[in-house]
Amino acid sequence: MKGLYFQQSSTNEEVTFVFQEKENVSVTEDNFVRVQVKACALSHINTKLLAEMKMEKEFFPVGREVAGIVLDVGKKVSFFQPDDEVVVHKPEKVPWTEAAGVIRDGVRAYTALYYLSQLSPGKSVLIMDGASAFGTIAIQLAHHRGAKVISTAHSLEDKQHLERLRPSLARVIDVSSGKVHVAERCLEETGGLGVDIVIDAGVRLYSKDDEPAVKQQLPHKHDIITLLSVGGHWITTEENLQLDPPDSHCLFLKGATVAFLNDEVWNLSNAQQGKYLCILKDVMEKLSAGVFRPLLDEPIPLYEAKVSMEVVQKSQERKKQVVQF
Image 1 (tube, rainbow, N blue to C red):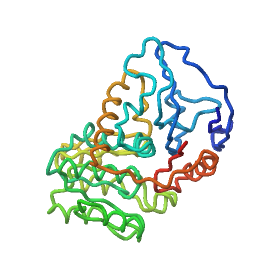
Image 2: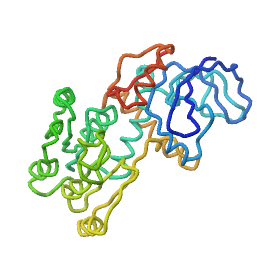
Image 3: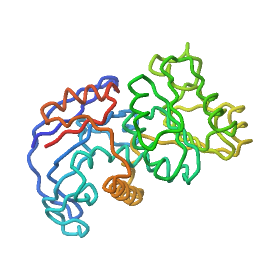
Image 4: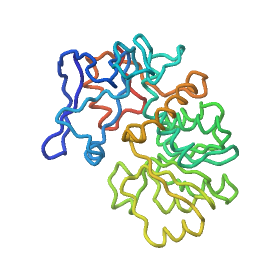
């Protein structure tokens, strides 16, 4: 059995991807399930986060977002049977590539909108970098819930992608020039009331001169606080967010909340996995019903996965890449 793994250097700075051959294993544990993988999505690997969550290994499998057919089950497994098509249980009309391609981003978007911010009809939502694979799903889920959606575009191609989405967004804010003030545009769109829910794609903590190039198009944390409405929810992916006392005081006066959304929220401890299995089941049902469609690249064969993963790891891939078997 051939698989793609990543190996981290001793300095934790360099990540390499390698193919390894391993023996086919039978189900030896009572609670295990053996699956023939039909499709596997590739996502950026946050090595620092994996280390903090005690998930490090010398060789860590790249493919964890998989869909396939059950081959064998352990003695205590009752939910699955051999020949079942699974992600959880995969709806029949959902293609393998789509099933695998929505696992991570679908669960994260669902968690951000339905759990962390309790989205309801009529709310205004700002989804930063909406043309990403995650952002595209989040926009569609927000529209399905009856929200007014605003998004940012980092390039002309992103802007055109967002403008093609149906239902149409309330506003697409082109930030590619670096001269547009997101807070001003959002306050203008909401009549000065501010946005009820913000899902960022990272924020700047300092001035542009003191931030790396990769963060130049991101809004400053003060912009997010400014455009947030009274009672608003800020969902951030910024793992090192620092709020000074004046920032906290402003959020306090607004009665606003801040919640964190990490890359591995769908892959937490066993105590939390029951909840996320329920979320994934609902995500698959919505995918089957046509509520949303993922932003996928053309599927690739396994032998191209190493090169593709190197591109994904450098965050140079906009569409979700899926390996098809």
